[in-house]
Image (cartoon, rainbow, N blue to C red; front, side, top):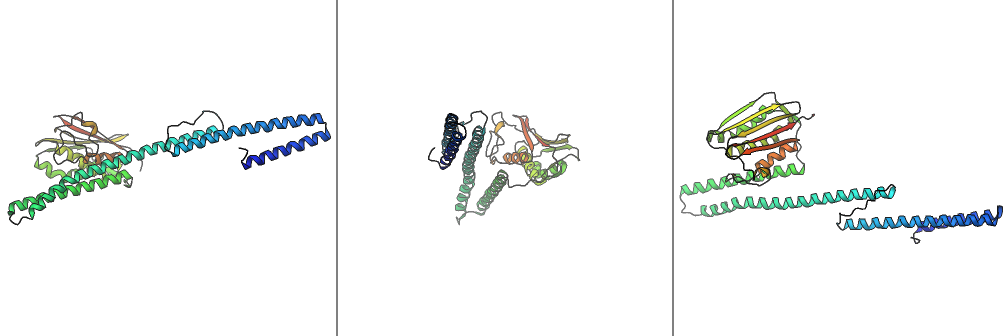
Length: 334
């Protein structure tokens, strides 16, 4: 401590003041009074040195604490719950430490998610790629009859379309996760939204002879992004179509109240088991009743799109009875 330049300057000034005070008191008052002034001055200097030493020891502890933080130890608690600037500094350092700890945990979690996502994507792409490689080898056979050649060519095209959809969906999800998607805040009529979502799915419904029932006030609306929300609804309705048998029914109802706009999409299909229900919005998750061509990404994307617009989606299901998706968009100011 005494090697610090600021302490040396402070002591020099204090001893200089003490000496001057002692001399002036001795000249103008008495030696007894001068001795008393000298004793008091030395006592004060000693108190200052003791206090300064304590402050330096506290600062040294903080330095050691910060060193441990830099080494990745975020579990230490330096707070002492006292008043004063040092206690305030300790409290602020602790807050920064907790923030760094939380950020580190988030980064670790993101890294794990990225690793899992890359693994899942590799797995999803490996199957169609292997299938196409086999079929392209067979197509090289000059003696292959035209019927088989057409069949293999059609299968290659199906696999390519599946890969294109998968890559496109993953790109959309990554944009949402990265926060680069700017969702519009405009008035969306639910009737127009449902019409846009159902239109590309009418043929699959017709093939399975499914009945579609849409009910709701044409003026029902919410604040959101029509294009992205349509994408979410297509995936939800598509899921209902895939898990509903021929001749089944799909109901879409919507209503509005002062708090939120609610849309329910329900079917009378196979339903979802209790074990699968908590996981259906997880990426690449395939439940027991998943179709053979399912990738497990459609509902995950629908969930991301809806929740990113301050909405909420819940699902109620019973095996062999059906599934109902409850979607709520809470009131927002444009």
